Image (cartoon, rainbow, N blue to C red; front, side, top):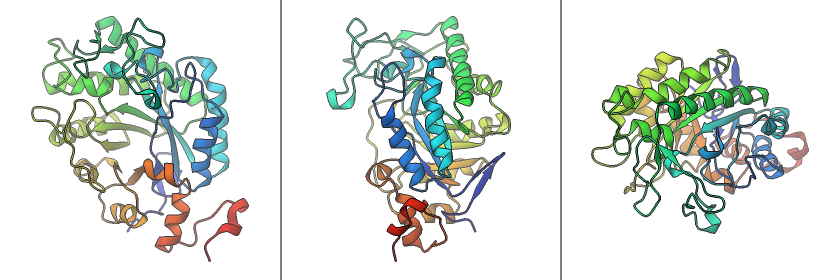
Length: 355
């Protein structure tokens, strides 16, 4: 039976355990460039024993950023610092991943510590957001521009070009961000997609862009390296996307050769979400029944909780975010608390091991 510290091999990549540093926006970039903040933030989690460290959502175009402070991978000059980061992650026994993203109608926002409000397109640090339809996320926000066919082709080309740069930067895995109300989620949810062309209406038409983005990435991403997709498993809203839709989508993604579905939820509309520890794990379990690997995420904070998710077969990996902000060395602490004492520490830290 697998446990939290069992290795997992996906294609040609072996992960030393099942613990993943989930993408967490840092809003600490200028023009998309990574900085020493990202090196230390991501590198310390590799030192802390995670098997896979994934960057924050990294924009495939300038207009695909959530804020002016987001990481980007929309020009070749971004590669150098990202390569420095992946090299450091690899030196400390972890694998490096990046989450390719486009914010869609949730773009052009201020950073959280300055209020997080949308910045109008005619203001400094603002730009016109794009979306499947001219439906803003909130009534007080500027309506996005509806993508035409040329705009959709640009989206696919941007993801493809970003995947080329991802490989050059030394990343082991790509996660396509199709969750949390960002562009690809906006297309597959009927709450935000009001189109009547081949990209709107029926389930098959609404998921089309996501599947075409997967195809575009796979044209340049090595078949030997894993490809993940993060989805929002439910909109938590009547008439919206639901878990049955997610299961159907997972079957299509599996047929496409996607290796793992990272099962999050919400973010596309204002909704009442019943928060509790592990509240999204059931979605990972339902999607996993299709035969595809899954990642569980959402208020996973305790070692025993994470271990039980893997041991019970609810998911294949656990994606942890906020707990890693509190404790970069969560895996080392978890190994001690769970009795997996053969887990290696960095030699520089060995004298700090619990007795």
